[in-house]
Length: 334
Image (cartoon, rainbow, N blue to C red; front, side):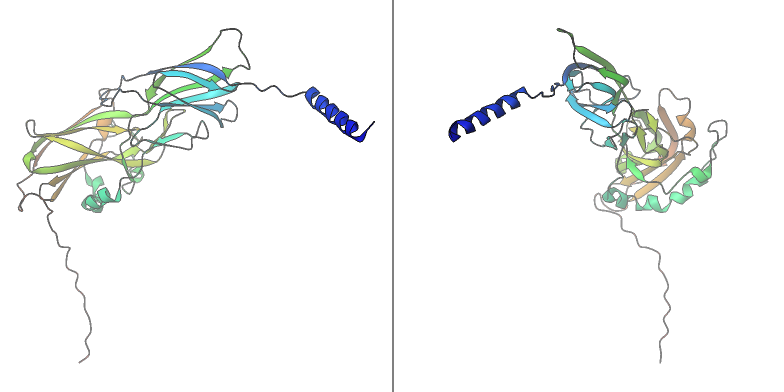
């Protein structure tokens, strides 16, 4: 046998041998129909109900580690999932203020909001300097708020933005088989409900509204975040920041305050910071702890007697202030 024929024969045998090798079957992801319904039955909900993108996350049933992610519309749609047993979390994407962290694990997936900007903090420097005096307000009766503990009322807590509504659907046992027969299709149905509460706030009895340039509200003792798999609030308490609107016709300051919820045993102090048209600031504090209890309509009403006078300076600009003088003594050698 010539050398050339020998080489060709070896090559052919190698091809035949490789063709006979057993290869593992590659299973394609199954097509699954995810049907979603968003529950907008929320007291005082004022958000848009337009189309939203939803993130569908599937976690290993035993380890709770993230295994697969797909994106759908707000009503769901066809998604493609590898075979396996999962826990499922679905939530809306693209919220302006609500953020998600630690979402590589089912139980640790957490919705939260960031601290307010340094610019806003700078405008609230008078408020920050008086926070330690807020506990001197009226006492909350034990019947209204059991186990209120002043030591647990943190007035140095972070000031954060109020959250946007986050709609979450859960399923703790989803089975995706290796294969299905014929034209059968797997359907997963779920209802997404918000983990955020909306509270309607009214401050009545405010005159001189024409002299108001901006109104800000701050409420202490609120939950910073929500672990969305169990819909449980974090133990970290924060102060929630939100701007209010003013209505001269009704002498009212009003707005919708979104929150993950009230922290148990925390006192809730509402501070209303009013900036007039010349930059001068006025601050009013109210204890609203009892209004968070047994209030299915989630309406907080404060009746007061506030009068914002016409600014001493013309509209615009700011009201200058001078810090207290500090005496300094220096020895001079003669």
